[in-house]
Length: 111
Image 1 (cartoon, rainbow, N blue to C red):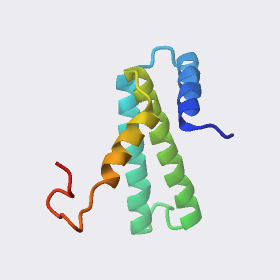
Image 2 (cartoon, rainbow, N blue to C red):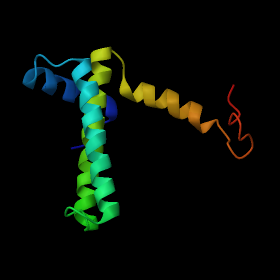
Image 3 (cartoon, rainbow, N blue to C red):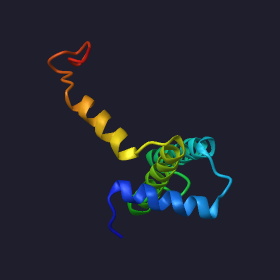
Image 4 (spheres, one colour):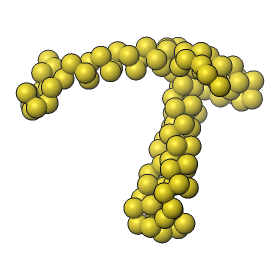
């Protein structure tokens, strides 16, 4: 499966509308929070080497699944709010890449 982020956002939105016709931006945002919690849970239990999260292969798969779910929910949030997730990412990345925290530890050079 090879799609750019814009295509993927559109495909997932059509899938979501078909499978969850009552979905909305609020539900997508709550899904992000839930998945971030799952990622934190796996990460913490792996650090503690408890609850079966000691193996790095299984833990990596669970982390990747949580990150993927976070992105799917973020795509949904963006779709319902009417903007392109890739565009938001491009704008923010452009701003972040202009910062130099070593040269300017107070503001990073941003105004």
